[in-house]
Length: 405
Image 1 (cartoon, rainbow, N blue to C red):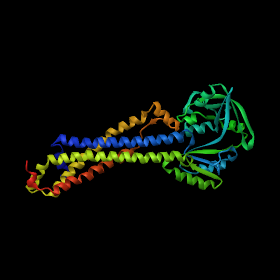
Image 2: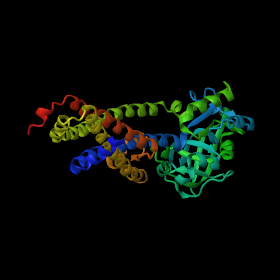
Image 3: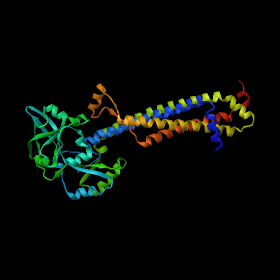
Image 4: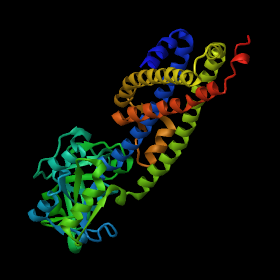
């Protein structure tokens, strides 16, 4: 303990030097934490864009549906099937869908669209569909009206209470045709969804597609995203080979690859940042050794053991780095929380480029507590490793040359 007490007193003998060293560590922690938080937040937002908007984290289909997404590959809804799905403890929400493509028309305007027959309340619990409503009102369980994405409505020049005509192919080749009143307009952050989505209640969709009692998928939301693959595996065991259980990574492999590529690129950037952190801390160490060379030479000359002197210098550096880490984490918390609630938004051509790929040009930060702890520990470890250099210099110290002015 005497080493720590003496080290703490020595720190404040030269306040400027201590503050410079602690400031280097402080900014290192602040920068590394902010960079990691933004990286994690951007990837989480990317997954949210492609998963929470529509896809869901896990989907259950009839075997072969993913390869050939046609209505004839639908399966019959049954209470027993849903009960088997809900036996997995990590599941928080399950909602059915009946999906098909159709031709939407208004006057002489036509556009292709995705017709999604949903359970309105179940869909809202899973994808917060109601929050995407910009005008009109939300669907009821037995509603005969529809919800239309804003982009599709704009292309067809339709609004609230207008009528949209749908023509397509129903179950087993039946003709699907109908006229529906538009009850509400939706806005999605993903432009592809915004340009093609049409929602109707499940009973109305079954009537339109002549698919009574049929579903194309169950959409599942897990309680813990970390156990996603384990949850999908357990559901697969429950349902057998007649059904396919796919995670969002299986459904959207290009997005998974994009995240993996960007993550690898970010690791290179973080490596450069850590290298700059090393130089910043090491330069303050060199300054400290140069300023205290005479002091260390004198202490060794009057009989102080080099091992104790090395331990003292290491203790001083550990306390300085620890102080900088704590200060950096303390300041980074409100910064990250601010970036989480007020994310960076990019406009202009860059935003349009992101939208063409189906992503919002929004970069929020992640406030996961592990980020602060992990980055603080990394910078602390860097400081501890660099503290070996002063200790090594002490053991090589020759007191006579060191005391020369």
